[in-house]
Length: 332
Ligand code: ADP
Ligand code: TRP
Image (cartoon, rainbow, N blue to C red; front, side):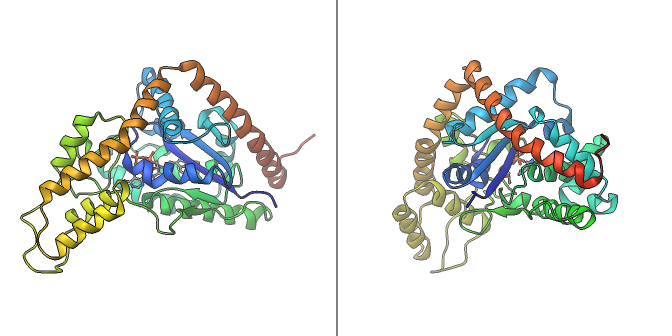
């Protein structure tokens, strides 16, 4: 039986963080041994905010380097830049004809952007989910490892696939958001407000490029309180968040000890944060060091991107040829 097809991308808009790692890359690394994987740097998606052209190359290299340092093996997967696969924008154009202004305007991430960047509500932002659908459908992907925040975008990709199929004939399989534990992940930010992200909440997001001291400082600043006064009391969100982060990087026995201490009101948050800080440092340090080495090795990154693009285009060109045929674009 042929292996199921996996597709996922990360925007090249800044340093990768723990949310990207546990929402996405952690799954990529496991999936590379089981499935036929296409992972890419979503550089076209990054253009919605008009980045300085001088920054693009370093941004893309960083995403590649941090993925490889996190355990992705470019020999096992196709690791490429979105802009190296011209079949993606071609499929994007086709899918745009099946996407309605009304449904795109209702997408919560679009509405957020309208609120936060009212001076730059461009058409690329509106059709962002269509480009994402093209990214996935171009390889006829079925499993899409992403964090919780992308669930709705994947659902839209599924709708566009079905719409294409009902108009032109059954062709695209239905893609689904994927996480090994079923539940999609949302890594909370250290200030308890929202999720970790590349550009917002910089001081409460842990980046894979953070040095040891910044990691310690950020963790120690995480919001806590005087501690519970009643046994087995309910945990406030910001304390739950610290437990959730600890659960990601610390030994389960240690997490249990702190959970019991919480339940019998003997917990000392200062100690807990110190432990978490050291476990974070141990987790992030080797990734940071390897990523730094790799980012300075332009030749190696270029080789990875070229080989990745070749693999991706092989699959993409087969899909686009069939999509054109189904739509009726075959004149000679
Ligand atoms: P960001 O939102 O930080 O700019 P991207 O939009 O490029 O990152 O997201 C890349 C991947 O990382 C997606 O699969 C997304 O769902 C995941 N991701 C981003 N932030 C988090 C988070 N805090 N928790 C879980 N997953 C996340
Ligand atoms: N939109 C995703 C994000 O902001 C990144 C992305 C682009 C993506 N294309 C994709 C994720 C295709 C999965 C599949 O996080």
